[in-house]
Length: 167
Image 1 (spheres, rainbow, N blue to C red):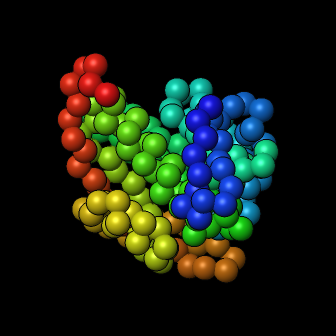
Image 2: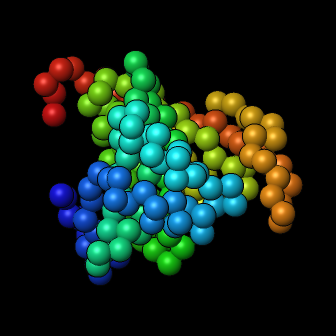
């Protein structure tokens, strides 16, 4: 388990793999964060498929979590979520950087993700981390009781190629 200080330097976050015992709790957090959340089954399937799924805990409480899928030559961030009261503390950036490192070590040349066009904080984070828009998916996100359908931007970041054994 790795521990790093958040950007505020006030409290440490412990990082570890997402485990079966976490799934119900993470799915409940997800429902509180996203209008169209991943389900318990989505998280369970991600673990069963061997995707890189990680959580960050502060004081024993999961405050950030996400899922990275690796494929030959590329990676895709499928989920990256920070609980509301832990935002703007560098946790999403820290997890994203972990995922990028995993992708590079696996030999991925590119990393992709999709994000709502209205999610300005996420778009700013991804731009700062070198992601560029490569496509737009019209009406990608379904409508909810409080919002109409929404487009997604597909973002890509090129990754440096690492050779086997390179740290």
